[in-house]
Amino acid sequence: MRSPLLVLTLAAACAGQMPNVSGERIRAGVKLLSSDLLEGRGPGTRGGQLATEFLATEFALAGAKPAGDNGTYFQKVPLEGVETQPDSELAAVGGGRTVALKYLDDFVGSNERQNAREEFDAEAVFVGFGIVAPEYHWDDFKGADVRGKMLVLFTNEPDSNDPKFFAGRALTYYGRWTYKYEEALRHGALGVVIIHTTPTATYGWNVVRNSWGREQSYVRLEAEEPALAFAGWVTEEAGGRILALAGHTVAELLAAANSRQFRPIPLGFHLRGRLTSKIREEDTRNVVAMVAGSDPELKSEAVIFSAHWDHLGIGPAVNGDSIYNGAVDNGTGCGMLLEMARAWAALEQKPRRSALFIAFTAEEAGLRGSEYYASHPVIPTGKTAAGFNWDAVYPYGRTRDIVVTGAERTTLWPLVQDTARRFNYVIKPEAEPEKGHFYRSDHFSLARAGVPSFSIGEGDDVMGKPAGYGLAMIHDYDEKHYHQPSDEYKDEWDFSGLEQLVRFSLALGVDTANLEGLPTWNKGDEFLAAREKSGVRP
Image (cartoon, rainbow, N blue to C red):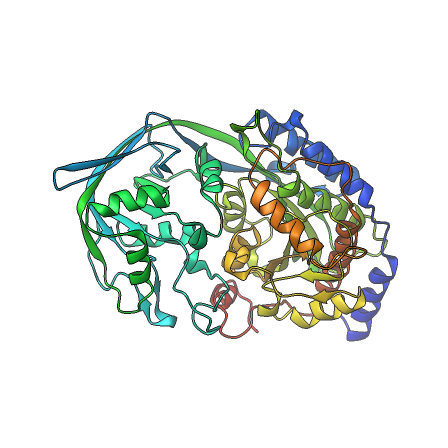
């Protein structure tokens, strides 16, 4: 085992080098990745292929070696594309009445069974938020048999300001739509209809429509593997129309769902659907590069730096524009990832552990690329020290603060705090914890596999700008450009903040790669069991 003195010497040597980091190089990467030539970087499309070739080439030029399949930079991710067709139908039928819904205007959804044609006609049951959370003494199912039924529910979770009850304002994974579908499947449901409201989803119907009104990507099913016949959403107005068949309103059932005493409510009508889908095998991949560590023993362990390369491709036109360029989301993260790889490869004294640089595919489809990597890792999760992720970092200049939500849940927290002090950053709590950003990006897939992981982002206290400027810019992006064709590159963007975040991440990564032992999750954390299962003990 290395002596503590040698470890400190290595860390000091690496930190002292701090190779050149350039915001203008980050800008160049963002500009190319979000150009119309790449057609929105949809997985399994020409634009996606071009994006991954560009990333692999840049990793090679940086000096990071291929770490994918068969000596390449690519890890193939076996996905199935399921594109619901406009003639698909959904209706509520009961009491001699039928409420027919129109695709895109009233409902969106997909058949997770990955069939070209899927039909269903099943009893509808309202199950509140669809949550089973024993640690909070919460069970929306109460033993009800919902096998073969269509579940109607809300996204999000029970209202609370108590940080010990569903984390108060902060959204936990129980509130995410992905959890709702997973829990429904565990209960044997046939399908799920989420009633959208802007407060419960924390975004408008246009985001749901733009995200779901296009091809969805799923990890290819194994033979006889169960899946939902329908996973979808309806608008609040459409939800009100179908609930009226049962004599209920959206507001009434949302209020009922907030009670611990809530019990499933049979709605007395059937949900009937006929989905036609275009099915295709998606030729998509993660891009994986490595810089080997310097320690003969510890180089078999790694620190991961990641960002997702995909966006929404070509979709419904908005103001005549149908290319969803994804400049902020996530051209920015990829530009930072490439600059991080350049800087790390340029270190004369490499850190003890290796560094993996991963551009994940299909994040927008539900973290599919990172989910696949977590179950097929290049370096075992039990030998992965940490995962640091960048996703949608707005280029509005240097900030005095950073957001590292989730870092406080890990044993890396003191190191994160110390690194922030070294860079004169104030660590700021997440501005909108009710949106549950921790559960919405690729670090979450690594966390579920036990790896201490979190995203690194800016705060909103922008240097040289008036108070409130940063928050106003974030809100403007969320309301007008998130998952819209207008998320496009602008020459006036200031990349100095992204440049400084890369420097911060480089310092944090070097120190993590030189730690004597492997980090883990704090006692009582939801991911600690997975970490211990991978062989890492506190």
